Image (spheres, rainbow, N blue to C red):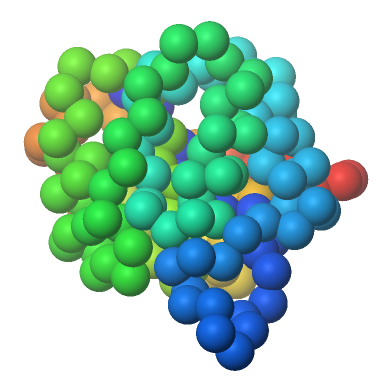
Length: 168
């Protein structure tokens, strides 16, 4: 069984004149939440071995801080996760190879849309309800999937949890 963790980047600085969206960095609050999200993933007994990360500065920063809770995870920066539609997002995951636990660090609204699209039979009610409101910053959906990543499609996974890196 594979585990797919779909995470949204942590809180980033507000858009500013002269700063393109791709370059926005995390705030101090965002940095703390990203590290905490990694800790919460580890508390669930999960250990991603592969991180697929949007090329935006804030997602790369989030991934590095999140992965600090784990040793030796490979990180792949993927342009196709920045401003992507569901199909491109899933095609990136399809190339995850034989990794048993994959974390994808991306953006809204794509992260919550993909989580809801993949959630099929066996998904839990509370996480489904939380996805209906979108993914918060430094939040992540945890899905279980039986099969090869390249077979991932609508309703083929089980949404089992939604966690956050923000203080409780």
